[in-house]
Image 1 (cartoon, rainbow, N blue to C red):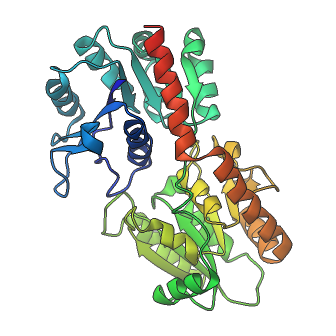
Image 2: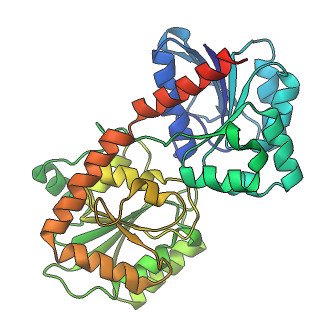
Length: 381
């Protein structure tokens, strides 16, 4: 099968500077290329990557576009691919690209892949219907997104399907106590009970709620530390005004705060080994955030907001704790303290979390689901 994948215009593939969409594209489609499919991926250019790159014996081709603006990017994407023929075209998280792609390839089945509600929600109902009329299928990363979209666009309900993202369970796994000890010493976070946040440091991710929660956790045998890994945008190294306010808040509340800043995707798996508990206090209506899956695969008990598609991954009291009152610092404080004060609970959440990810959320399974969907479209073409 010949597949064209059009990534968003903001970040390169592979995800050398981050991005969950770009991670998903890389992980899924290089597996499809390994299975014999011919895959062309168009993404944003980056100085560390060649504009044109062939991998896996030529079956995986990267075309990287230097344009900054959406309209320039999709125009150039169509120009570099216009001389080729494809069996399926997949547009990642950019519904506004669909009309341009359809004009260039009017007879080729197009799949819209949605990783969030954000971009379809910005369209009027009339524009959204126009987009859905042109595509042969829509795949989402969570049932929450599928349900929300089919409620808004009921006429196209049959076009929607769900395929959860995966995790590299060989990379994200629990290391030995000795390896963890060495990493904690290297990061100067030894001798404390460490609560970890990984993600974009923006207000919608709820980091300020977690800082306030830290101040409300009853004293434990070891002092508490909050470790924050991330930046306001993938690859950014300077601190944002929001992160500066987080530091001031932590200082006011006497919270030990270790801020790692931006961590490259190739190293992020090490950061999970610094944690005793992982917390995702997001306020977003997210799909199924990769950070929760990565933490669970790493053998860490997880506390997360009951928002969006997060309950599709985390089963409350079985493989994590969900917080319905997600703007309330005390609710997070109680959940964190519950885990810290009950070792049996911590072990059970960790073990069940790892099992669930390995069984349900691998990249191989995600690639197989998408492969079957593409094959079905090609058959019914």
